[in-house]
Image (cartoon, rainbow, N blue to C red; front, side, top):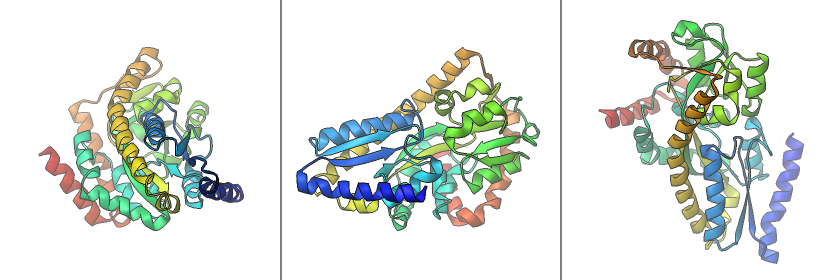
Length: 333
């Protein structure tokens, strides 16, 4: 795989030189792992539309959805090597490459709602986190929403004890591992593109995800129950290959920044709408029964996952967790 990435990177490097010689459009390959009709997919397509419009055709954006080019574990390396120029990986993806601070977003129940999230991502804390990406040969451009996660399985998930012994697919995140171990479940790291088949064949028993991801990947067809926990958040960081981004012409980069800002507002606005519509569509199919927790059941789930904060403090950073909590509590109080 690395050899093929290196070959792709060499071709991409040649393509960057070509525009100067032949006045061909600057090519941006934007790869992602979800369907086009998800919040991320819609935002990526909007960025393509606006980037090409604002640069008067000087830039051509090619969007590759649904892991067409690279799977979860491959895409960041592909970006660093220059095989693609832009990605929008989930926050969880940065922990395994050494930027563990982004795993703070994975902590259960740390973000109560979207206004609180926006305060974090649009403020000094969010900007500081984006700067950490520079050291890995990438430039952080924006935060994109997916939404809040629900739990699904082929058994009813109402109390923490219901999770015991079940195998749950997770993204590669030590925080998410700790979350499911706190519930007595068995976390299984797995590429997003492999989840449906793994649920269908019983390789894993359940998963956590946003409704839009569940619906577009048809996970509800192989999960009898969906519990509306809203226990965690999935978001993305739009990143560009730093060498490519820094090397853009002075009359091009500001227009791409403008396109990214508008695509971000559009995509984040679509997020809640897409998730609400996905829940409605899943309900229509009748293939997955919805479960809403009572206040007492919700409190029991929160209590069961409290130890996760201490378990991962050494990894994510206790001061960062405390700062994050200070920001979120200030919003909700």
